[in-house]
Image 1 (spheres, rainbow, N blue to C red):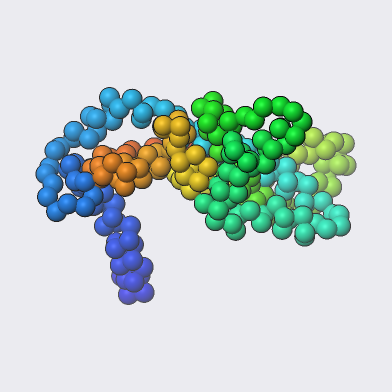
Image 2: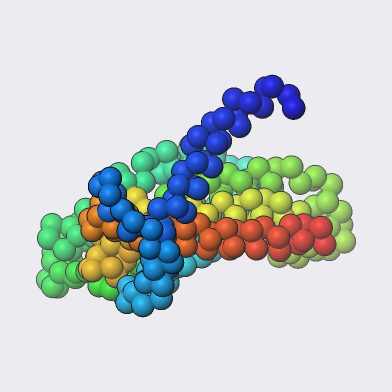
Length: 282
């Protein structure tokens, strides 16, 4: 084995493999996260998940954050990329403005939007009251807050999808478009039969990255709603955090973390498998 691999393998083992194995081990205990005394309880934590009244809603929220953000980011990101692939003035500034939210901390982004949506003194409610209407508790509405968090996550990271698609568009040979024009293909036909098939590798990268990021969403949820009201807007990441630091229930938190790892792995690997097959067929 090349000795140059040793430092990378050591870092992988210390910061990824060891914590992963330790997390699996802790999930079979009743450790509170602080005490030196804990005992092995087998699969009790995993059985507890089957009867936890909150876990179903939290898993549903996690899927909404993951799948919802992925769909919105890719649709809007592709639209931005198609627009920016054209020649016009201020294209560089426009691209920078769209990408700018990506470099902001997700926690700070969450707080920025929190001040827009909050009930008392929020910018949106100030506008509503200015026109004589009653303020709306947007973040406290259990039917809305999950989708508002999804919107904020989409707004922040749509720039990544845009850059990926823009890079894919710029490597498509112009000859294909010229040939399709000669054959009489319109703009829609050129997109469906030239652009979309040749963007397959970009689609794969963007969707898988968005899925992984959305399914482990934490910062924006914490900043905007702190998982509330109750666990109405919690994701698996925030639930794990609250179990560990709020309830001092590290064993159960570790089992939630393992569930999240399993869900993300299955979904992302499945998506990668089918999207890679599409690359081959086109």
